[in-house]
Image (cartoon, rainbow, N blue to C red; front, side, top):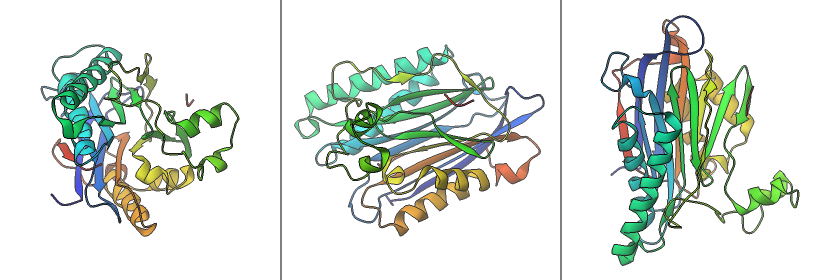
Length: 292
């Protein structure tokens, strides 16, 4: 398959602000400038307001696989498909649905690793955002990231499960030193590495506001651009155009890793400038690689 995948979807959704709202989303993934294969996977759904999945809400997810041969691609694809399938299988409490999905994905990856020697030791990061009934919910493990752009500011709403991030939190090194630290690619937690995984899952939703934009990305993007760049692009461009701008920026920086990004925007139903092009609700999946 080609290194790029794109999609855009828009559908009305309930949120904390009065009046009809619209959720618009898009995702892109690219193999990058160096690697021959893409081990990232992206998937999202924006159900129609009167569709069978409307009660579940909107889901967006990025996963960055790791492992020899094609194992990383397999791990990230298993994670994306498992979580998406379980989330839309039946309506349940969002934290419970995410916890079930992450656990099932971890188990499926472990079982594949045990049964297929070429997949031994494979794993994947996974970062997912849900918008339901006017609230955002986050599920996360690894060093892919989630950002919230709100009122002209950017908030990193996920914490990296990496060695350098832990060292920064402990005050051993600075954020600037972490960018060039020798072991900056060491991941402390990921799906498929241990028999049990403890993802970070929000047990209380964050109320969504008109104008909010959530950005999910793998480290192929976050390693190359700063938070302010993410704020500026996501804050000004509609989701598909923002995703393309992020990919273009990574490629201009000679991206050595796969690059994947998703953008979800919350807007008034009649604010077409934020929604961008309106299409029928879409589901897209392809194996590629607390604010106030």
